[in-house]
Image 1 (tube, one colour):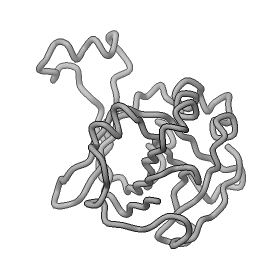
Image 2 (image 1 turned 90 degrees about the vertical axis):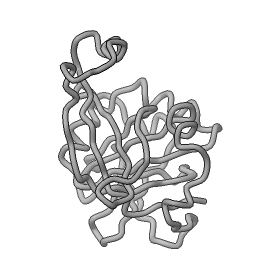
Image 3 (image 1 turned 135 degrees about the vertical axis):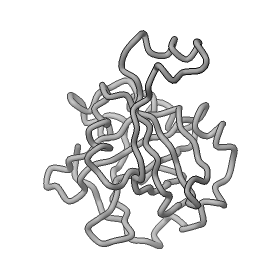
Image 4 (image 1 turned 90 degrees about the horizontal axis):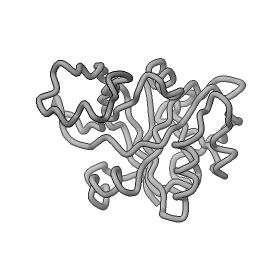
Length: 185
């Protein structure tokens, strides 16, 4: 992926409490989608990746505000989320629907998805040099620190219809991340 620009706090986004996140998380994630992004922001070549997601949620766990996401091992972003301490969830206005479609259809193994989608990668961080990648065009950005990961076990599905999402393989890994920050326009 192409080089990121570093965006200082207090730029075009406003830092708010995640409890001020507006809109239904169900609508924002399922219908409007989000980009999950992770990687090493200190790398010379920008070693990170992003993917479109419509599964996940926001809530409270272990007395912490958290986000939970699901990624299949076959996705290129899977390795980046596994290896990174931080990940971001980026939400966009409807004008970026085609960019989100492209980020969901193309693999970062072969395509610079940000460039192809017309998105500008930026690095945000609460600790200098330890930031997380998101996009200048995002309307809302949630910054998370991984707390927990677990592979979904099909033997534990209580509803048989869930298995239809998997064709017998490539079960998602669940990640729970503590929400460290939320920025909005």
